[in-house]
Amino acid sequence: MVKTMDNKSVYLDNNATTALAQEVLEAMLPYLREQFYNPSSSYPEAKGPRDAIEAARESVARLLGAGAKSEILFTSGATEANNAALWGVLRANPDRRHIVTTQVEHPAVLEVTKELERNGYRVTRLGVDRDGTLDKVELLQAIEKDTAIVSIMHGNNETGVIFPIAELSRIVKAVDSKVVFHTDATQTVGKIPLNLTKGLPDVDILTLSAHKLHGPKGTGAMFVRRGVRWRPWLIGGHQERSRRAGTENVAGIVGLGVAARLAMHNFVQETRLKLLRDKLEAAILEAIPNVFVNGQNAERLPNTTSFAFEYVEGESILLALSDAGICASSGSACTSGSLDPSHVLKAMHIPFSAAHGSLRISTSRYTTEAEVQRLIDVLPGIISSLRRISPYWDNETNAPRADVDVFVQEKYR
Image 1 (cartoon, rainbow, N blue to C red):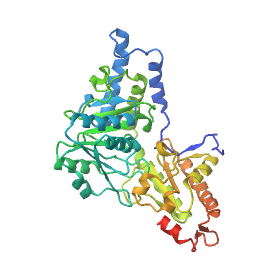
Image 2 (cartoon, rainbow, N blue to C red):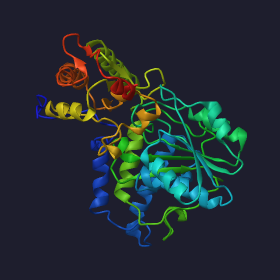
Image 3 (tube, one colour):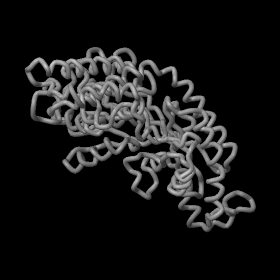
Image 4 (tube, one colour):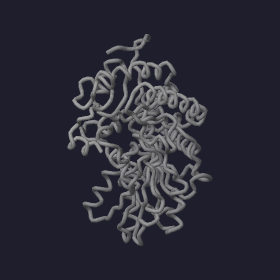
């Protein structure tokens, strides 16, 4: 593997996970060593871990603009939090048997809704257009008399497309105020400012994961607005005010708290990351033919670009980038073992010829301009090399072959 001058690979897959911030690590270490006490214990030594959890709760509440820190509870990550959101609302509202979600959700929501269907619930999955945006009229029409919950992600993990959650949640509440609105904000928390009190007053439940904002893996959180009909998912002890059983991961929670405080001081990076993203997209679109940016015309996360290269395979692109010392992905890390095109790109009606050649680039506040430039320097050569061996590419014209058979054309349409 070719690496940079400081012998480090270029990491451009921050939507999969982020590097642990040094400040986070330093804050966690005491709770992995001398401050190991169970925060639920009654002796004085347990007060330190207990107070640390509450300080972290306050930090997460401030990051989200929650009305009170009591509306925050800690989990093992966004997957658990999403499960808890969906199952918890349905358990609290047994007479409501219908769920509304989208076709482009993360598997942590998508697979839960499939399981709910196997348990007799009805699920409506809203489609998206070519830019990955939702039809608000379709959402309005999808709400039924027994709809229990609407679950729509805030920012898409593959394309970076941001859904207008404030407006969508307002539409839902206008139709039926008893419907619970949940948003999986795993990709937006810490990247763009949020305010659940002023900006998102109709969002009832929000879920997140620490490792997407330079915190530790294995820790997440839920915002559950006071008064929302919801029941705990994990049953056992009385931790988290009896809302999530199990001895708290004190070190992880402390790490999330520090990551939340750091994020609040780093929103100024949003403009820099958007400039880096725009520079990358402009350079690639100019240098490489038959490529487009998925969701280019929609509002997107400042750190995320999803390319679609026609007539090449995404896995081959990733292998070549890896050989060049660049870490990237073709989409969600949770589905990287599949050879099928991403369910997100399928829902966006991306042509088959391009959906197989997807490449996601996601930066962080630690990403440098030199690292993005490294990708700009090597990617055109990689795509050119792969197309030279493609049976559908004409090397003389540097364009798709004119005689690609009808079956392939239909398949690619």
